[in-house]
Length: 338
Ligand SMILES: [Zn+2]
Image (cartoon, rainbow, N blue to C red; front, side, top):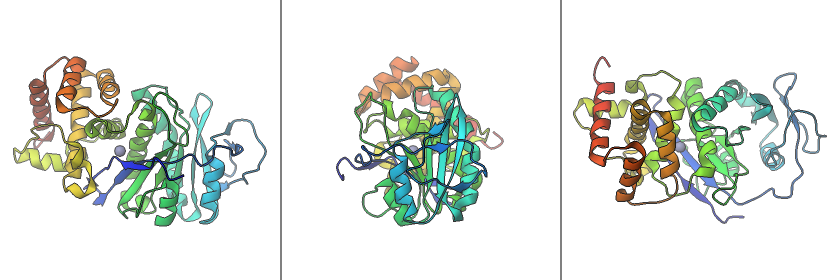
């Protein structure tokens, strides 16, 4: 069961919260292929309650994600599990699971889940499950267990997305967002909501995303989705980028993949640059062009020349013009008084 484990995609420091958010996509081996479905009512009264045993009878309007029985068994070994199910529209539902000490964070995430799902769908389209499973781990060991992480999980890890192995083009299974035990305390409600949208974007785009695709596209798109409806200024979303821009230190190029590693020392800037590139594309070329570019670039590793060709073909401008206009956008959005 240890095959095909990978950790990729790191999200750097959000200086606004002085917290390094490290987001990993962890691909795990199939663990629940033969489990019976668990059925959880969508209208739980009271709203928060102890979860039903795995053998509970099916009910109408239920969540039938096959990963839930195994997930519950794993979580129950760390204490009683409470859940909240949320209708996400069109008869679908999502679920948030956690332990009693995390009741407030569960409420925040449950309160955001329908809006976050709708927002991601509005940007990306409806070709994903729209039935998110969100889990809050109560300890580093539970977090490691729920993400099947390789080795020690850094304490800075805020959240991860998990999926079973799958072939490109197939619909991924076993997808969930897992928040670390410190996420709520260190991020606050607004930070939790933004990270939820970031992670749900990774889940929605997973079927169209091949490992090794340019990180600036994958992480920038998720960050763009996280902040898209927030109406926060670029100076707040990207404080590191702002400081550099005001010192006339503008990016010469899109950030390379190795800068996204938490050990790079430049991860925060790499994420902010990526967000700004995607926000610039959405602003000046439209969101459909941004989505088209994601789909065109998320097909696997390629060299810089090939990336430039895709950007040129999708947006209709050559590399140097793209970079020059991006830099101008950064200057305009980060100047004092912007
Ligand atoms: Zn990410």
